[in-house]
Amino acid sequence: MPEANTAVMEFLHSRRSRPAKLLQDPAPNRDALIPLLTAAARTPDHGKLEPWRFIVLEKPALKRLADEVERCGSDTGRSEEDIAKARQQFADSPLCIAVIEVQKPSEKIPAIEQTYSAGAVCLALLNAALASGWGANWLSGWPSHNSGYCQKTLGLTDNERVAGFIHIGTASARPPERPRPDITEITTWLDK
Image 1 (cartoon, rainbow, N blue to C red):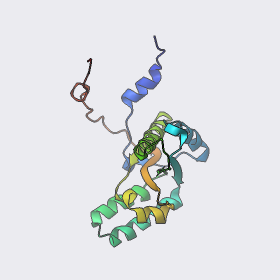
Image 2 (image 1 turned 180 degrees about the horizontal axis):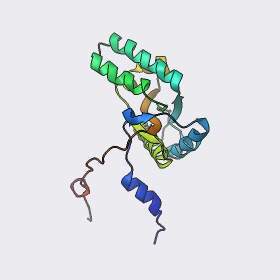
Image 3 (image 1 turned 45 degrees about the horizontal axis):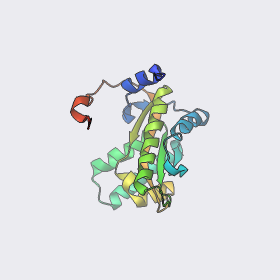
Image 4 (image 1 turned 45 degrees about the vertical axis):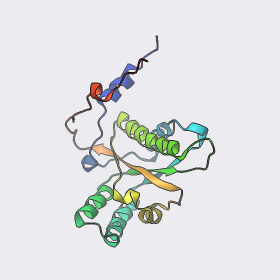
């Protein structure tokens, strides 16, 4: 019989992201971030390619990203509402880690598996932050899909893209539980 880690299963069954708008200072300092990043980097990585990296965005960088959202949004014809929402993501964040997918050439590991690994890093980082007592939220939004914005603000190259922005801080409130999927509706059992 396998040995269960009931504390981890209890956490996974009750984990709940904290809305980014409810995050405030203090945020983890650099020393407190290292264990979170280390946990996230233990994500499945077929071929040991490490098809991801981290960019830690502290307050001055977040202000710069927020300001650039306005310029980029105006230049690309985004609505004022879209610009304001994207700007707020960076302007109000106590700390953010950009998880960057880094596509690496490989004859054995398809690009899609590298994308899956980068997404898994986002979830692992989010869960590590929540398990450590921080409030955290995984966001993306139109700036993360705008290559010009990402190249200018984050220095990304042509083989890189944002897998997610993980915002971390102290949650000012706990949101109510939300509806969860009905497992019986989304599960198929094949016995033949």
